[in-house]
Figure 1 (cartoon, one colour):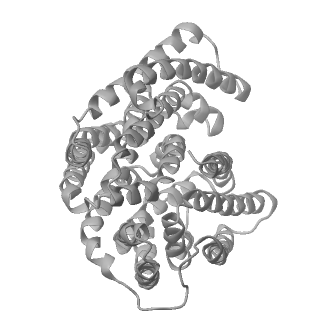
Figure 2 (cartoon, rainbow, N blue to C red):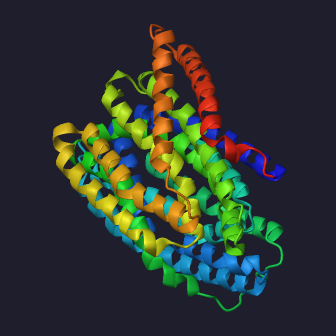
Figure 3 (tube, rainbow, N blue to C red):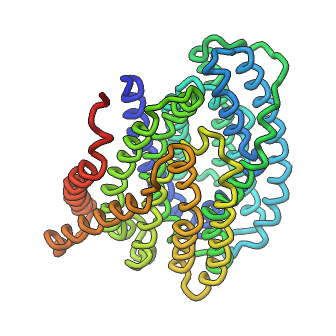
Length: 490
């Protein structure tokens, strides 16, 4: 691994960890200052805005894929024209999102199960959160895509993390030190988000050498791919957001409970996926060149994901309830069954990104869209049926079933069989990860099960003990299962 990759990833992880802690403090501050209902509106509205990605229809991914070939051939004029095309596309998309936001803000404020928050306040919260979501599409996304093509994904992650940390710190200060309304606070965060465009403009002019930033003829060729990517995005959004939407309609208070655990599991998932995304352009360009050693690199990266999954999920299982109890209160704690369902889903989320890295690098969006549709249909139907009688456990069970039987088989077959010409061993790898986690959790309860967690120090010590156990088990298991790929290449 290049030294710049190592330090970039290290800085990215460190900053993301800081942001994760601050965001947890932010959630608590919103609840204390404005109440659980405002927090639930905030969280559920953000899930609604994720559907705005459908306007983007995978434009960034399509343009990045189209840039791989000319970048590999050093055709910088073609790269520049594609960048101009992406810029034009993103500005149109941002405009469409803004028009849709106005409608969504007024309508969603009517249907959510609010009891204490006024309608006008709910509209403003939803609208401003939506603007904060839309602004980067107008000022940043095209520039981030170009930086990723130049293999500066880690700089994008560092810059994004620093910007988010600054915004959260300012919001926390305003929550605790002033009486400013939430509407004015969100307005300020929109302004700060817009300023990130200037930061990225400076970055591309410094790091993206060889490309002219004079306006040329925009190349819109990549837009032809977006209908297939759009379907992937639609089904992905259904799978990741339907739980919160259903819960917000059935029982708005359960959204805070669900989102508390979703927040906990999403941090390690996003962190490990950010690391693998650093290699997205590298994999794409190597595939364009027909690199014969890519499978070994793929297995090395997958081994890293397995290793991280074992440690993070073991800690999640043993300590998540205690963390939520100390963080938000006893009333927000889930049953052990819900924790286990989150953990099983988390295994897939922490390992699947490597599969997508290869699939997307080959541009197999059309070939894989049926698998995403199958998952979305399973998830939506089962969630609707199970949400009323079982609540959070019901929607999580639906998500697990849809993911493991609807999404994983087809996508992994494409990568292992169709791209690499290898036997598909993904379920064996998942079984190894889940079995190792179970072994680590069982060992923890056998050795330390009677240790009470009464404060943050106790929780920290518990996490250290479980991390140590899981680390030891993970090292042995990964070396046994993936040792031939981890040895130095001959």
